[in-house]
Image (cartoon, rainbow, N blue to C red; front, side, top):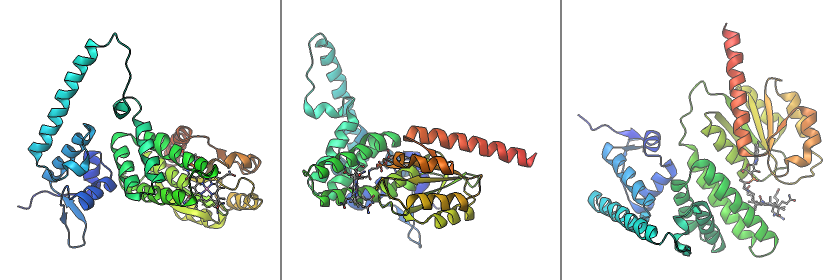
Length: 334
Ligand code: B12
């Protein structure tokens, strides 16, 4: 009988590694070689899954994928064990010095609470050096160590903010900003395939309206909604209101989320917002956010859109909408 083989989605769920990370470990480091179907889809054996879990554990114990990718199972286990023995010794030493004031050396920043700051610094350094491979690697390592919300809120968003500020004060060039945007966009695309969305999931359309070209915020909104179990129709940037409304209608969406970053003073936005309002069924909620959304508060009030200030708030709104949609569905079937 053929050995049992699993598709990427199942492997990603069991190991907790994103599909992107698994593909990079394969392509760049040959850490595993999955079976390929005639249509070129990857399939993984139980052994492959065990190996991925082991590699993940070794990385969590401080190893680098470039160093361990080709090692045997026993060699990796030895490294993990070595690390845990070291940790035990370190703890004993710590205890004996606990009454003395401690200075944490820079390299140990990683072990302390400052894990996100460590990853943020690595990402920024790679951006400064114009090194896309180092940036991608830094993002992958951050995604292994941090939860999705922390990765987004404590690494990606502040990284882009810092890049924007450094560009504004002249210490970074526009090319650094472009490079970081490209790598981050691709990385986020890779994160999308992890979620398992059910057929009955509520649908949300995500876009930026006409005149709004920045789309990383919108993409993040899409990821957050997917992580909340929503089916996302991601339309990208610069979308005319009638296209957004048509996509919502055709997909029976119960919400539309708009990201508004720049400019904060586009006179055409009012007309776009009104067209959207008239193009959507009144049962569809409009949610807006992004750093320039507040500048258009009068317009949002006029069309009954809900301006949401942060991602936690966005998650709450999604949960409320989902619950009221379920209630509505129950009433209809009764
Ligand atoms: C990357 C970037 C670009 C890239 C965009 C690439 C892309 N595909 O998006 C490029 C290089 C193309 C670009 C171009 C420009 N940019 Co620019 N850009 C940035 C930068 C550095 C990061 C934006 C970003 O992606 N942030 C990361 C995401 C995750 O953050 P975010 O969008 O804020 O989203 C978060 C929240 O706001 C929220 N959110 C966002 N949307 C939504 C929606 C909902 C529903 C909810 C709930 C939440 C939510 O959730 C996200 C996660 O926390 C910012 C700096 C900054 N402070 O943001 C400048 C920035 C936005 N850009 C700026 C400017 C001036 C420009 C240009 C005019 C520069 C120029 N002279 O060419 C052009 C304009 C382009 C255009 N046609 O509009 C200014 C805007 C200043 C202002 N408000 O007046 C900024 C602030 C830089 C600065 N410090 O001056 N830019």
